[in-house]
Length: 377
Image 1 (cartoon, rainbow, N blue to C red):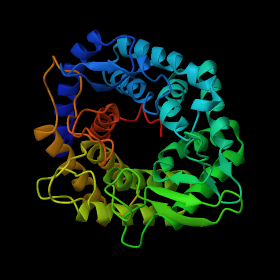
Image 2: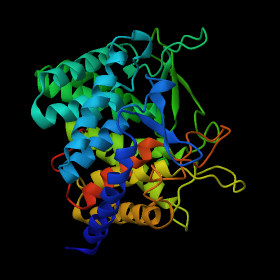
Image 3: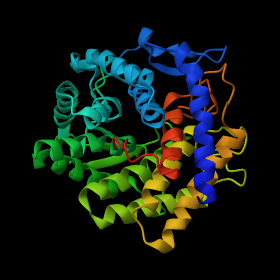
Image 4: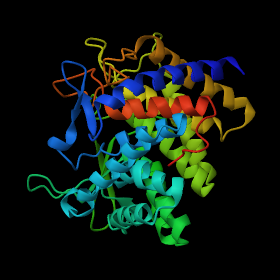
C-alpha cells in the first residue's frame, strides 16, 4: 500500500471510531453546525428546508459503506423520509435539489434500487428541470425573497447539482435532463470563469432574453474577488460535467480553476474564505479545502499521467493539513472539521459546518479506494 493510501485508511479508522460515539448521541436529527458544547444542533427545528439537509444523510451512507453497521443505514433512510416535506413545498425547492437528493435518494437507489427512492429523486430532478431558463441556458438559483424577483440569478454552486439531472437522464433514458445540465455548464463556463482561473459566485442575467449582464460579489470578500468555496465548486463541478458529457472543454476548465487554486494555497496549507481577502483579519474556510480536495482527486482520475500527481498531491496536502491541525478528534464532540465559514461578511466565522465533514470523508474514501460502492455524483 502506498503511503497516501495508508494515511487515508488510518484517518478513516479515526473517523469511524469517533462516529461510533457520535451517532449514538445523534439519532433522528439533521445537523448543520454545533453548539457551545460542541454538540450538533438539529436544524430541522429551525429550517427543515435548509439547503444542506442532505449532507448528514450522505455521511450516513458513507459510514454505512465503510463499516456495514446498520445504524448508519437506518439513519440515512430516516433523513430521506424527513426531506419529503421539501417535495411538498414549491416555495422551498430550488437548484440545491441535487445536494438534498443525490446524497440521500440517489444513494439509496444505487444501494438497493428502491422504487420510493427513485420516485423522490425523479421528482426532485423534474422540479429542478423546471427552473431552466430557455433563453439564457441557465438554472435559476434561488426563489423570490422579500418581494425581490430572483429569476435573473445563477450561481457557481449549481454545477454540483447538475449530476441529479445527469442521473435522471441516464435512469429514464431521457436526454432532456442531460441537455439542460450540459447547457447550464456551458453558460457557467462562458460567463462565470475568468481567464486566470478564478470564478464568480453570482451571475446576473436578463431572464426575458437570456443576456448575461454582470456578476455580483456573493459570499466572498467582494465583487471581483475569489471566494474559495466557489473555486472548489468549480473544480469539482466541471470535472463532473466532463465525466458525464466527455466535453474536453469542461476538463480544461476544471484544470484552469484547479491550477489557480493550487497556486494560491497559503504556505500553512489552510484555505482562507477568499484568496483575495485582506491579510488582517485572516479568516479560514476549511470547507473549501475539503471540497477542493475531493474535487482534485476526481480531476486526477481524468487527466493524463503527467498531471495526475499534481492534483492528487495537492489534495493530499489539504487533507493532511486538516487531519493534523483542522480536525476535532475528540469523541465527546460531534463535528470533525472545525474552521469553516459560510461567507466572508457574516458575524460568525470558523465553526463546524456539516458539508465540510461530508467532503472530508468522501475525499479520504477516494484516496483509500473505498468509494467504489458509494458515488452519488
